[in-house]
Amino acid sequence: MAVSRRGPYDPIRALVPGRLNRMFEAMLDVERKLIERGISLPVGGSLLVIGRKPPVEPGR
Image 1 (cartoon, rainbow, N blue to C red):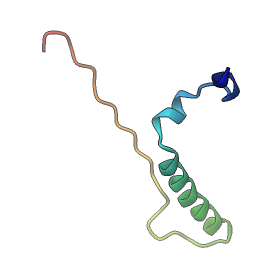
Image 2: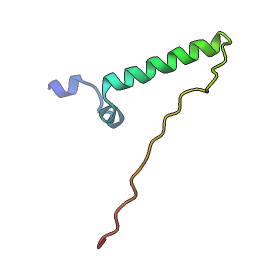
Image 3: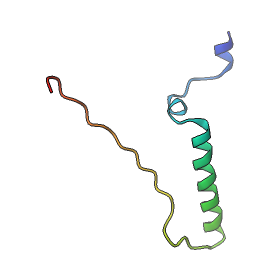
Image 4: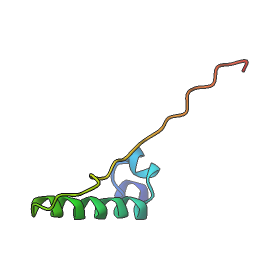
């Protein structure tokens, strides 16, 4: 019964810790506000890179 009150399970939220996600959101909010005010970011905006490990072939 307690599980049904939590709402639907979101697998993406399980991958990213809450504090880390809030930190990235705060950084993006600051950048967005600076851009809205016409301030040029000298080194560009934030980039998020996701790497994937290639699958291992059986027998290797």
